Amino acid sequence: MERIILHIDVNSAFLSWSALKLLEEGYSKDIRNEISVIAGNPKKRHGVIVAASIPAKKMGIKPPINLYEARKKYNDLIVVTPDYEYYYKKSKELIDYLKSLFTDIQQYSIDECFIDYTSFKKLYGNEVDFAYKLKDEIYKRFKFTVNIGIGNNKLCAKMASDFEKPNKVHTLYYYEFKDKVWNMDISNLFMAGKASCKKLRELNINTIGELANSDLNMLIRNLKSQGKLLYEYANGIDDSPLDIDRYDERKGIGFSRTLEYDMENVEEIYKYLYDFSKKISEKLREKSVYANTLVITIRNSSFKTYNHQQKFFNGINLTDDIYQKSKDLFIQTWDKEPIRLIGLRVTDFTDSNSFQLSIFDENIKEKEDEKIQNIIDKINKDYGKEVINKGNKLI
Ligand SMILES: [Mg+2]
Image (cartoon, rainbow, N blue to C red):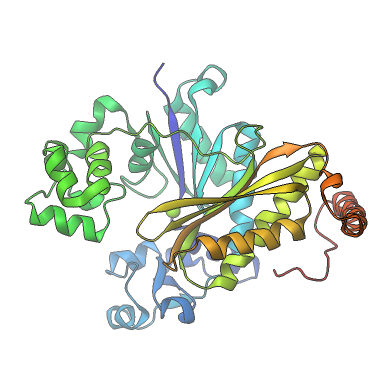
């Protein structure tokens, strides 16, 4: 059976979410209907615009131009600074809602996710009809619009959701790929970055169709593994499964996040590692198991992904232990290139943490730590949210 994958993408997510926040705070205008932009933290993006309203885009004000250039086009531009905490809240609301409808969801970024619809067709019916209903339901519940792309794999679903915005449903099935995509400029191909496009143009390859019909060996010679990937994508080929965070004996327990911008600041990365450690340790304790292997995943801005793992004699399940070990592992692994994705996973579960192998005194301390952590877990659970934390929490 052909797979059916949906890709849901919030339209101008940061701008839409900031618009909602401002309306909640009593601001009289809906900035989605004004010439407005969200401009990143100047320290991180040097005043670069990260999102623009449709009216702003119509005036040629589009990311990633900076504020200075944008103001030259329209001086009375409304500029709003991003509120990432609020964005995460909105993102979580949407994902939680989708999780109530589906089992297999891969959150791809703060405002995008993939859903495997294949086995849900029986339950929810034709995917196109369903996508229209889902899109409208999301608007009704959350007051922001999404695009939904439908395809037979993640690549096609993602490209489909990008066709025409906002508030649209598009399909890109295998049989439509050639007609809908091959005439497009190569820059529209998923994963074809600036550097790759430049090389391809030098090889006189300008459209996705031209790329699809190029000689694979020649592409590999010129663009290495990226050449093979782009060739497959230009032909609509992508067999990658959804990457899902969930408890799985084989895969372990893990979390990963695609970052909104390429990060180089170690302290920022540690915040993610702390967050992952906390979530992992909660799950481990929920299942009453210990993990004996920790795996870190880093994808850098050149899309190179690498994993590094460490095994322990004594299983771990406390936030602090996982966090400290993940920081060490991160430092050993990181090649100092800007980071696009960070992930942390534990595997090799045991029912006890093999006390006989450790020094007696340390055992007592671990037992104590564990007791405290269990009490904290219980209080947090009873109050339904995080009300208590050990003193060394970073974020
Ligand atoms: Mg989006």
